Length: 381
Image 1 (cartoon, rainbow, N blue to C red):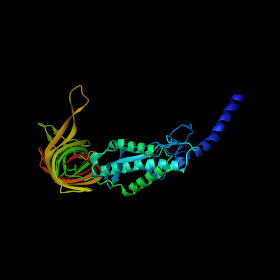
Image 2: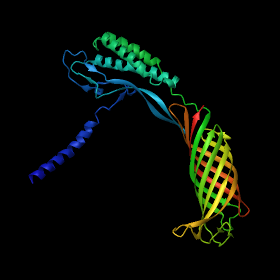
Image 3: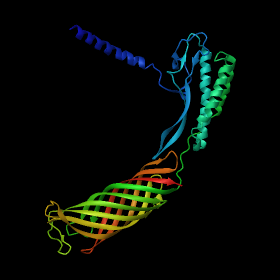
Image 4: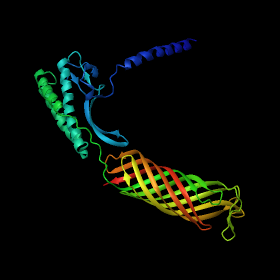
C-alpha cells in the first residue's frame, strides 16, 4: 500500500508540474531569432556569470547562411535563394552584473554589421542567380569587420567607438534596400517528355455488331515534345460489356465467333502527332491527328489445349485513323533550381473523331473522349 501511495503522489506531482512547465516554456526564447524581428533585448540572451578577467561581458552568437525557399506565384512554383542573418538565443549570453545599455548597443551593432553584408549578398544573387553562396566569400570580410570593431571598442566598453560604428552602419542599412526576387523567365521549351494516364470512353456511331456501341476503360501514353510539336503513343484497354446477340459473325478459317452474354475486351493503340496552337501559363490547345490499330476480343468455347483451363480468343481487328483536339489545364508548373528544366502537371481533355477499317466487315465511325492526367518535363533553351 505504501508503494502505491507513493506512486499516486508522484503522478499528482507530475499533473501539477506539467501546467507550470508549459507556462514557463512560453517564456523560453525561440531556437533562432532573425534580425528582422526587431532590436535585441537582454531577454534574447542567456544569463551567465563570468570571471572579472574575461574580455567579453556578453557574446552574440549569430550566423550568416544561405538556403532555398519555395515560392508560389499563381500556378508557378520555383525556388528562391535566401541569405539569412540569425542569432541563437540559447548560445548567446550576457553577465547582468557587468553589462550596461552600451553593451547591448554594442551587440546590436555587431548584428547590424552582419545585416549589411547579408543585404549586399542577397542583392548580388537577385541580380545574378549564379552568384548564390557568395556569402561564403564574404565571411572573411564579415569576421574581419567585427574583429576590428571588437578591438576598437575594447569589447564593448568604449562608448564613443560604439556610437560611431552604430551611426555608420545604421546609415548603410537605410541606404541598402533588399532587391525583390525576380520572377523566373520561362524561355522557349526545347525537348520534353510527357506521360499521361486516365479513363477512356468511345461511342461507335456504326455499331459493332448492332448492340455494341459503347466502350470504356483506361489508358497510358507517352509523348515526345520538340518546341510546339508533339509525337506520342497511346495504349487503351476497354471493356465493351456483354453482347445480346448470338453468333453475330462466324468464319471457320479465322474462327471469328461471337457468343451471347460474353464480355468483349478492346485493345487500342495510336500514334499521334500534334502542334500547340496556344500555349500560355494556364492553357494549351493542340490539334492532333493519329493512326493506329483496334482489336475486339472475346473468349471462345475452345480450350487452348487439353491441360489448360484457359480458352482461345476470337478477335476482330482494324486500322484506325483519328483527328481531334486536346485541351490542357495546367494545374501546376515547376522550374528547377538550375533554371534549365521546366515541369508541368495538368489535366488533359481530348476529343477525337475516329474511322476504323475492320478486316471482317465495313468501316466504323466513332467518337473518342479522354480525360487524363499529364506530367511533362522539358529542357529550356
